Image (cartoon, rainbow, N blue to C red; front, top):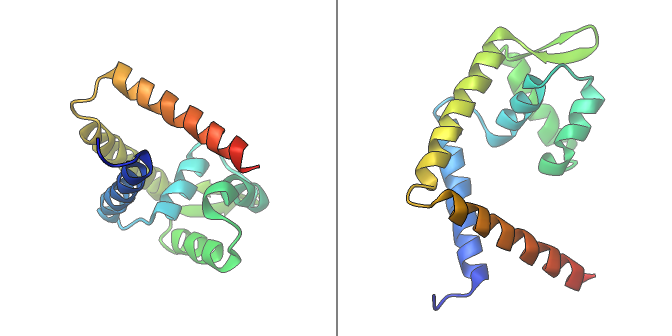
Amino acid sequence: MDKPIGYWIKRLDAALEAQLDRTLAQLKLSRRQWQALTILDDGALRPGELVEALRPVWGSDVRLRERELATLVGRGMITMIDDRLTLSDVGRRKCHEAAWLVETARQDLSMGIGIDEYAMALSVLERMSLNAERLAR
């Protein structure tokens, strides 16, 4: 407990990022590709709607977006039907495989942490984030 909370948050964030990247690499997916598949798993979207849904996690880098989506199209995971992007059968299977792997990894990451402890940690982090954002204004 001699390290400040920022140290532990950064350390956890880096470990979570690396673990997610390793998990998705098993399926030859990037995190952004997985996010796009997950959003489209909820239903077909027009290209602009998908861009808006992904903006909070992808940002506004057009070249990055085009490259990641082109890869999914090229691998036959996303198709266009009636001006809407949708998952192909291959994309849906890949999305569900990734969801299973990610959930398994999440369970491993929270091993030894009770449900109440996890909920409390989230609550504390949320309140601290809101306080920090309020103070930064």
